[in-house]
Length: 410
Image 1 (cartoon, rainbow, N blue to C red):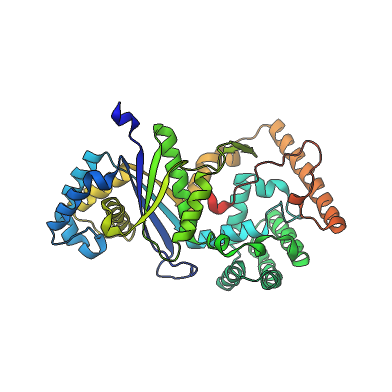
Image 2: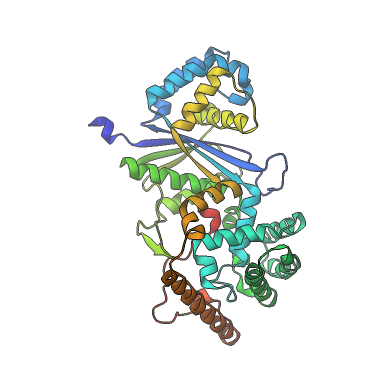
């Protein structure tokens, strides 16, 4: 009975954090890892982790400092301890190039702001992801840097003025795309922003919201979603999330945790998807120096070994066994071109490539026709009232609740 009531504790570490500089070629990815334990891992196993660290002449376990040599000598001890604790792990990757592509697509082609974008092109998840992939295919490094700078500009007027030249540069490269429909869809959206940059709302964001564009905040949102999923499956409350101490982003992480943990539990139904914004309700968010948290040190080991494996390093036997345990007893969120493509094909591959009955094709054509009629009407209405689509009262029968989740947040 006691075990059944024991809540979950999550201990979080990160790697590859370059803040606003997402163009560092030495760190193209951002990683976060969490050790998830039933009960307080620091209290229950802190002394044992310190004792294991002492065997290699350390007071705490920092994998990068120990290196493969010294870590190998204690890897089996750590494995036995993690087995005993019933530990599980969460590992997340955010590919910074893919993050930028999704931010650009969400900013420029949100049909709630851009009246020239058809509703289905932004609100149906597979079409939205494909659109972001197509956009990524025409973005140059210079365009990417100009857009990222624009996205983070503190002054609204400066951001508005910078947007049309960026759209012009993208439009000039659309001929790279092999299919005419993609060129048409993206071109129409870009033309609208060139003519009406005021319709895009990103420029009004405050500093705290702008930090939410950074890879570590996107990964943190993915982490909270993963923890909530685990909590629901196990029917166990998340008591605390203990994060490696942060200087620059500590306030933002704490604010985001508060927003998600206190969000409404109501389920939103939108464009065939169901989701809730609430994550880890009632949990505490705590920051600790890693040398004061055995759990964070275990997350550090998981991250470091995972990184060595991704780099193609040959792991010694005990370290390899430890990594296999970590990967086998956890889950992985891969927010990258490769990872999202794999997920998209698993979920929608049959729809995209399988046989389609004629009645479904007809229904699809009808949806596209209706969407096009509403797109044209919305553009005409904007010229009258100056209101982007999301600010208008929709016609009868058109859903308004639960806007499409931004790509960069799942």
